[in-house]
Amino acid sequence: MDLLDLRFVQALSSELRDGVRIVKAEVLVQPVECPLCKAADPYRHDSREQEFADAPIRGQPVRIQFQRRRYRCRDCGKTFFEPLQGFSAKRNMTRRLVHYIARDSLIRTFADVARDVAVDVQTVRGVFQDFSEWLRENHPIATPRIMGIDEAKRAKVLCTVLTDLERREYFDMLPSRKAKPLNDYLRKMPDKDRVEVVAMDLHQGFVTAIARHMPKAIRVADRYHIARLAQNAFDKAHVAARKELPTGERLAMFRKRGLLALRDRRLTESERAQVAAVLSPFPLLLATYESKEAFLTIYEAKDRQQADHALTRWLERLPVEISVYFRELTSAVSNNREIILNYFDRRYTNAFTEAANGISKLLQRTGRGYGFEVMRVKLLYGKRGQVVDLTNYDNDEGPPAGQYGYAMGMVASSGRKAGTTSGKPQRRGPAFSRVDRLIGEGYYDVGNDAIAKELTPLIDQFAASA
Image (cartoon, rainbow, N blue to C red; front, top):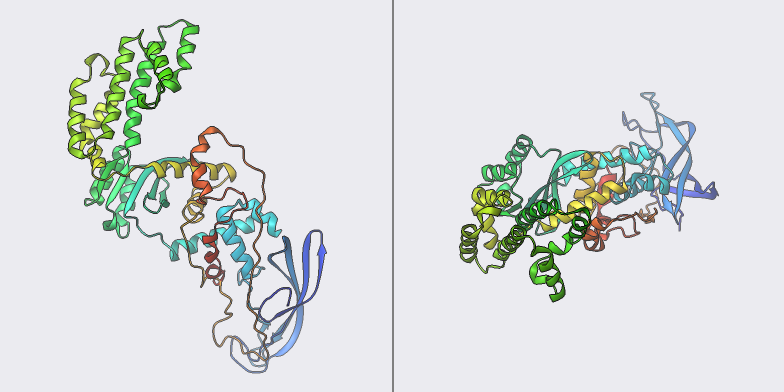
């Protein structure tokens, strides 16, 4: 079997030089007509030495060296090289290397990919940029039926994140959280009538924009966001109570904040006794804790009517002396009660969106210097489930019909070798433990030798135009 396995190319010799596999090769085809004027019988003019990068073989970068023949047309006098099959028209590399870089740069850092194939990191960035543009034009992601919307600061940009909560995938990212860019995007969004439910926090820009451009979609306030408002109310009261204590007692009470943040139903008897000991000297703090717990039990309601009744009862029973701490929550209920209660009809949350934002934080940490568009493409396409068919991208079918005539030929199926992933394990803090399960499921490869199998079809199509 030929070492290169390229159409119309035969390997002559191979040697390892400074960690790079150098393959001397020759082209097994000669033109029988001029590709410009179609005149027959061009003659050989001279030859030039050329070198092309190829995908790694057995983990070693590869360079293919040709003494490539040049021909001159007898009629028009133009010169041209003998044709190469399976090589990029834009870069001195094979199409399968373009494929390799395009695929791996989605899920690994540019520096890692550049080291694997022994090319400059700017070359990897260039292929990735071309691939990004091609993806945007040829593989838009389907509009979700159940959509999540949230904000996140990535690549120094406060952006809007849209997710598909059914398929557990990113849908899109916008480089702004402001109302005008979001409204412009939603106005032009394809198939937006397909969206049935949108889970969100109560950021007013999200609430009004979705209502304006997706009037049929049911807006559902994320239950965890609302629960956090209740917890924030208790935290404010906790801070106020600590201020009156001596330093030692204030620190001891501060250390109990984690226990106080747990739901009462999750506490053991011993822990419940500790909570009571902390709260009993502070009547207002105790009342705030009980009101917080009472509000959270509303989400245990079986249906919308029961939840609506419980919410009304909670507002009526909220003590006036602690209402200042719950002002943010009561304002949210007053302005968006319908959206909050919609949860009990459509029990969707933004939990996946929050976890996916954690993955994007890991991505930014592993690849320093990524701009917004690089982050966007990696998050949208470099994960499990987003399958893109690359059948026609930089395919190996050769020049358009009629560009060359062939005097001889030897067809071989083109193949590729999978690369390995390298890199030191990343230092991880406790905040990242929440996304470990998603990473384990393959939603994002952070450099642990696990390239998602679904990315394999992303190869051939891109290479055709590269």
